[in-house]
Amino acid sequence: MILKNIRYLVTQNDDRQIIEDVDLLIHGDRIAGIGHQIPAGNHRIIDCSNKVVMPGLINAHTHVSMTLLRGISDNKELQDWLEEDIFPAEEKLEEEDAYIGALLGCMEMLTTGTTTFNDMYDHMDQVAEAVDQTGIRAMLGRGLLDVDGERDRRVDEAIELVESCRGHGRISTCFAPHGVYTASEQLLLEAKDCAEIFNTSYHIHVSETEKEVNDSIDENEKPPLEYLNELGLVNNDLIAAHGVWLTDKEKQIMAEKGGNVIHNPAANLKLGSGIADIPEIMEKEINVALGTDGVASNNNLNLFEEAKLASILHKRNNPEKINEQQILDMATINGAKALGLEDEIGSIELGKKADLITIDLDSPDMTPVHGKKGLISNIVYSFSGKVDDVVVDGEPVVQGGEVVKVGREKILKYAADLSEKFE
Image (cartoon, rainbow, N blue to C red; front, top):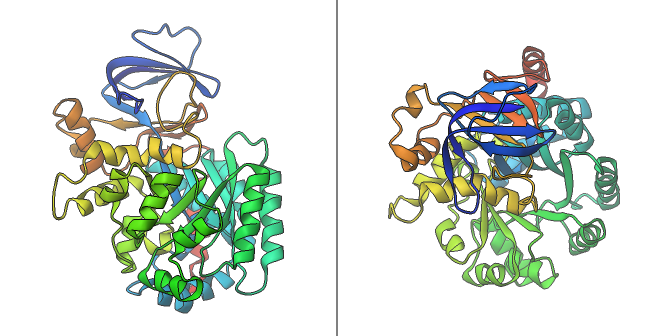
């Protein structure tokens, strides 16, 4: 496959190079050539005249099956939102529902430019099936908690997921305790052992709310990340979702020992959880990636929207605190680093996976383009997220804005028909 006549190729490589008027050759699942006037030969051609080609976005923290709970609960803080509305709704969520919700979420992400997502939830075998069918890439972890005494069953399911997905080209796995307030010390350590045995990442909610921090201090005599550090869990494999209430000491621990903070500004604002101090975290050279969280708390999976919100949120007192290139990094190469996949995805470079999106410059929200800097500005601040084409693992999965591997109308109907079940 050749993407011909690309107006701007946004590579996100180490030099953040933007190449004009270029072709891109894909061989199998890899980027095999970048150059001018690559011979067409027998290759399939995608005409990218007056289009941007860039790496697909990476949603580093979400719960994709929660798309079925879109709009089910608003105007509540996290704890009330969970206990009064979300947990009861999730008790009704069966395997088939999780599958439909995952199909819907994968479709929403693909058509808004996300090619990889990191998920923590229940019924993950069904999510894996949806990933397989839609063509998206994912890191999946069975959510682990034991406040109800079901530790052994969930750990067994987590291990089964890892083993069943082994060798899948687009699915990697992790171990994913829900949080320090829902997982006992025994479970946290058991998940750590599993992550080490299977050589996976460790995905967990950390310091999302002030209450979580205060409760951890009361119970463990330490805030959440400091407690996780005491258990030997803070290293480069840690994917810490939220990090809204990290202390200065905890930020320093991460700076010294590693770990990744996943910023979810929309959900944090909507649930009244607070605002993570992302500029300060980044100043300590801690890797920060971007996530939407679940649809029930966002209420969509459009990572381009999340990128704009993240930028303007941290400019509220000082517009120089963060810039558009840093935000684009969070949504691409930093997300790849957080998932331990930076050698495979997150940038357009020879030998890397062909996970790409195209954006039409002939649209009002991308016009005009004031040079290369103006291009990045448009992508972060003005683009709606409606992409033209999406390629994952060298395969077209969206063409002309529509998914090609699954039936759009059928998925929408199934999801709509389930709405009454959760009301």
